View 1 (spheres, one colour):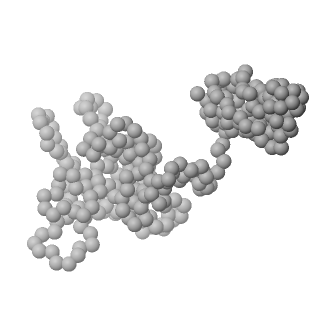
View 2 (view 1 turned 180 degrees about the vertical axis):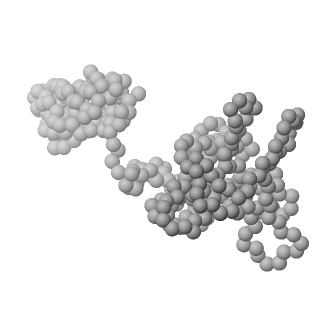
View 3 (view 1 turned 180 degrees about the horizontal axis):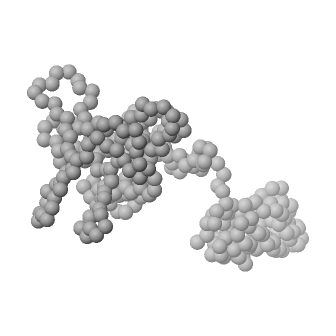
Length: 295
């Protein structure tokens, strides 16, 4: 079929298959608009590269203009105004793979849907699959989990991201050697999980639950053993409230013999540190390093 024009809201096509089920009472079954099948019969010698039930390419041989979207297949579910028939699950594309259809020798690998690599064919983006909107990974009651497996560099599939049957979400390294990296937007590794444990690769950033900070000098005690003084220190970014614990140590070249007596008067933004002199000399420290952890 050849046409020289198409309406803006219309389409042209060479074949339109339509199967009607009308005024029927059913207890199961399938209605199909069309079915195409590729078969291999008799005795097959050698290796056949591809066996396909349907090839549906979208082809351009024209010059000029733009095709906004080219799709080999458009799958959708449609009903009309006034239809009251309930549809439980609507699939734009349902790939059964090997499910319930293999009676002879089992295939080596089965995929319900396979999206192939693009090898740089596009000028800008090249992805095997794109999801426009929220995706959903279902829980498989037969496997007792639902998630995504990833191949390692030897092409062995590894359990990686999954929900277990105790409702825990698990992220698992593909092997003990590579481990699991947590990286920032530049690709720099900030933390790593290996068989040896959890490693922080760079500094621990200030957060609302854990803070670490070096403060300035303490007060100076009196020149008597047990003489004490207090200093108020302010966090760079405040805790949400005073429900935290703080542990400090004196650092730098201390004067005399200072020691920390304790902390008090905790506020979200600040706390009070008390030091005392261990001997009969005025005592102080140039810096105080503290870690605060919210309860």
